Image (spheres, protein in one colour):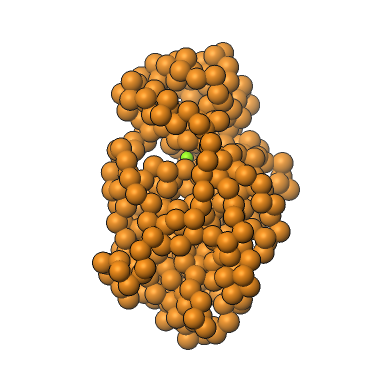
Length: 350
Ligand SMILES: [Mg+2]
């Protein structure tokens, strides 16, 4: 196996604001694994909130790639490769996802079958929410109306005018709305806002209302909230699930947090065993990272895979989104390919 990576630059169509930051542009890392002339790709999207800034992602890959290349010859040896990556260093989940998802893409291409089929997932069209970032209320309504083909919306919250946003967005559509405060609220504030949403009706659930470590607040909300609570920033991998039992109604899984497809599947199974609802999300990332998540999307309750739709230009093609649904295809591997041939991309290369 020959493993390398490229850094590519991505930009969003319009500044994407959440309670703690705004994304305009950023770099992402594309891992490439070649074996017997077949090439698999996986995205390692940096996410500084968890300490995974771009230098950390590249630093882990620079250490891990020579080790994996020297110790493993067979790309099908995924269990041992995944375990070895965890031995090399803890966390570093985006970089691990880049390698593991590239392996799955490669294996699918070698076997000439899509990854969803390889892992026994049905190929149903996947209904995804479209996420509306924070902004002026008029702009948020415009954004919603420009994406009226989606059947469910996710609204970012966590501003002093949350009540106005909630009311305006509820008035602007009859479709279900889910909200994400990205850890901006305290428990009492969260309860008041959630009760307001419940009174208006049509809100599905509330994502990460509180600081990831506010377990006392989460317990308070769990006992009183009229809407289900789904945690995101509080849960990265399966080891985070046991301490959340009794504190949340569901978890939001992302490949950049789990370290790739196999751990995400493990998390779905563990969550199911404890009657937790399962959401599958993504970062603002390319169609490659979204395609990897889409392979397991039919296994979850709520899908929020719109990261590449937010981009001005997606450098990967092959994952059709139509009328608010992602359509898995019969193309082998993750089903997407770079728009440009890798040698044409003007980037750093290992
Ligand atoms: Mg979230």
